[in-house]
Length: 344
Image (cartoon, rainbow, N blue to C red; front, side, top):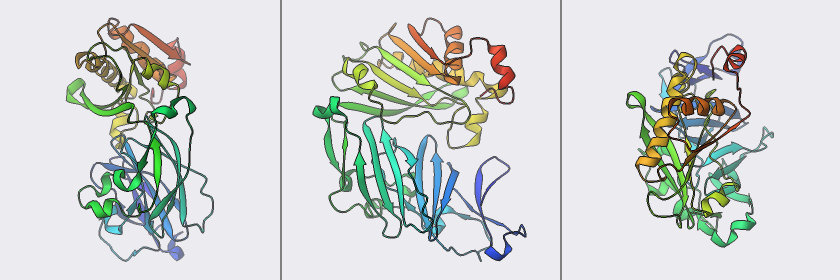
C-alpha cells in the first residue's frame, strides 16, 4: 500500500498476505532524496511505481514477490528497479490500458513538446520495450526525422548517480525508433529565480528559424493549482505559432506539481500569491534573456490558470501585451466560496 509520512511525502508499506487485516504494515520503502511516489499499479509478478522528481516524471517496475523480512527502512534503489527508458526527461508519461493482472507488459503513452504521442509497451520481465504506434503529424512531416532509441535513450534520474551507459541503455537494442521534431524545433529547460530565491522550472520551445535574439513574440502559459504538473505534451496547435517565429513557454509555478507536496502547498491558500510571483518572474525572464522581444509577451491560462493570469496582469500590467483567460471566474468571491479549502 501507499502511505503518507509526516512531511506529506508518500512511502510504500508492505505486509504478509495473511496479516493484511492486522494493520501490521512495515513502512520500509522510500523514494530517494528529491523524488516522491505519486501512484502505483500492482500485477502478479511486478509492481509499477509512478515517481516525480521536480517536474520530471518517471515509471519503474520492481519484481514481485519482494523480501519483507528486512526491518530497516530502504530506498527504492535497494529493490533493483527497472526505470522505463524514455526519449528525454521532458517526456510526459501517461499509462495506457493495463487491466490484465497477469501481464508482464505495461503500456505507456509518451509525449513531449517535440515528440508526438508515442505508444510504448514495456516488457517488465525481459526489461525491453517496443514502440507500438506514433501519432502522425501531416503538416509537419517535412521536419520530422527518426531517432534510434539505442543512441538517445534516457533511463531517468533515479539511476543517474549509479548507472553507467550500459545500464542506461538496457533493453533498447534492435531497430526501435521514434519520430521527433528537434531538427526543426528547440525545447529547453530553464530554472527561473523567483520570489525569495525559489527556482521555478520553465520550458521554452521555439523554432530554429525564429528571429534573432530579442525579436520574437512569445506566449507564456501556466496553471499552478491543485498539485497538477502543467501538461507539456505534444500539441499540434503550437506549430503555427512556432513556424511564425513565436516562442512558447510553459511555467511550472508553485501551486502545481513539483515532486514534493510543499511545491503545491507553497502556492495555495494564503500562499497563493507565490504562484503570481513565479508567473511574473518567468515572464520577465523571457524578456530579459532575449527570448521574447520587449512589448511582445502574451499569456494564456485556463480555469485556475486564468485566475493566476488575471492576478499577474493586475500586479504587472506593463509586462503583458495580450492575454487569453479561458473558463475563468470573473468574480473571485464566488470562486472562493467553492474552493475555500485550498484556493487551488
